Length: 365
Ligand code: 13P
Ligand code: SF4
Image (tube, rainbow, N blue to C red; front, side, top):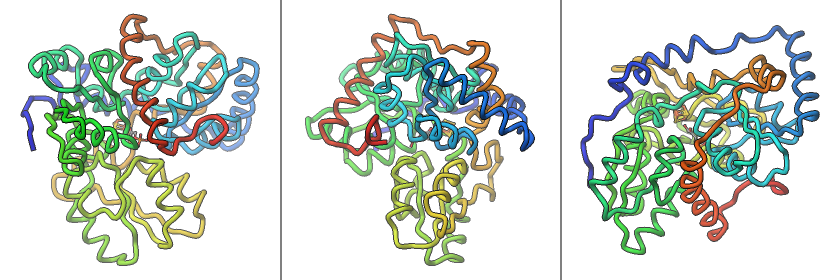
């Protein structure tokens, strides 16, 4: 594999971008409301969403309360591709994104005329933090012969430098398409997803060395042991996981693709290597099946995430209600950057339509 070692990992020299941010994120996790308060909060949020012509778009990793609320109010809970698609197609004047910042920014870039709100604007992503725009621009400048493909988990400024944006559900067909055209690829920021795509497609890819703090912690040896204890279990793995973990998978895919595999498979037991927020949807859709979390502990584990994204955990009912009441936490993207960043996203959405990738927009949610 063509690979450039560049000193980008999660421990960024800038303290604001260092691994302390995981501790800061956990510290900002909203307190769980009491059961009685929860019902009241939910009712107030429902009323405000309606009054403000707002739609709630949530990721599978956020708290089950928010996932259920999104669906109960005509919004969506989905992977990042469908979040972008659905928000773009929906007629609501306000999009409320329960997820992390790149998801809010993508919604704003695709819908500059709409108001986009988030429960907490500091909900980051280690991949985004580990790929600063200035360093990424220098990387691109050094390799002008390559088609620049960036993962959705990046800032607007990084997307503005790209030819294509991809999410995990479309990365393989898109890179296959570029490889068939003889294109060499510069890929950022997730090294595990990039490595997986490179192996599957045979494309010439130069990889940025970023990683997801949640998926990086799954352990192959412990997963093998768990598999041995549950020989009938199907192993579902998100491709942001390390290669040794992906190699043990029966199914590798985006969050939506893993849920769909769990629904379709005849197996009754599953081992899931992705953020445990996804288990809510899996258990709701397949109540008769058993879902086990893939192990993160073991030699070398530091458990900054323990299978749950600290930034996704910053979304809660209380701060969702607060943004609707006060109208703060509006996502803003510099218009010039946003216009340029829109190109790689729009190209990806067009490509998804061309290849008829199953997506969940309005009318087929
Ligand atoms: P999906 O697009 O598969 O939902 O992934 C988003 C993400 O952040 C995974 O960590
Ligand atoms: Fe980013 Fe990982 Fe959190 Fe997904 S789970 S948002 S990739 S840190």
